Length: 149
Image (cartoon, rainbow, N blue to C red):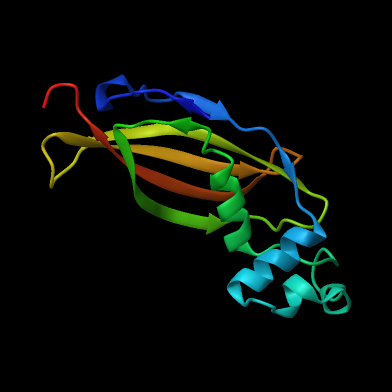
């Protein structure tokens, strides 16, 4: 991990970064089901999944979110803090054997209505599959200190 101090004013609209890839495995499915208690058949039952469009098990959306966002955690900014996520969408299914990576784009900078010494930076997070199709999208909201407080 890299530590880099970026103040609100330092974020450039349109700036992008792309993570490396990670291939989804049977173990990912089983571990995530165990952690969450979500053993629904479209995630865990291969025979049931054969009846679904695509004919195979579908990854938990929450797993793809967790892994996709986790892959972006390579840059530590000591003056920015996560305020949460908006507009989370599961766009396409992900299956065992699919490889995902995440593209992060700075999509907005705005004043924070509660804190004059900080601004909000919106990172558009798009998880892509091996065909560069968006499979998940969400807006990550950061509270970021201003240089001039």
